[in-house]
Image (cartoon, rainbow, N blue to C red):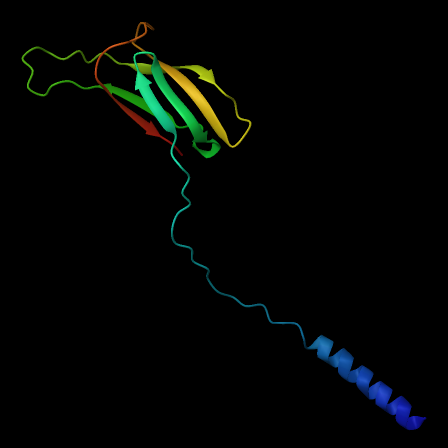
Length: 125
């Protein structure tokens, strides 16, 4: 019986001691990531009815839109440099993964601009 008791105690001691030493030490170091997370761009279209952005990722909401009139470089007459802005007419809302928006081009007086050549820049966060 002493042999059975001694072997059981020895086995139990080995089992407990291996659990005590099983913990891995906490390591210190630096983790570096390189690359980028890429999300598809919006489907956009511009016409005299305005600017349409479709299937835009929600992460791009809150971006800025800049509109500049462009014209021929070699022009004798002065170019119309009046400020043109965009006015949000419709928004599908923040629910879902994607959203749609429709903008109108307006001048400083708030009148809709339906003709001309413009450079539209959409900057997203």
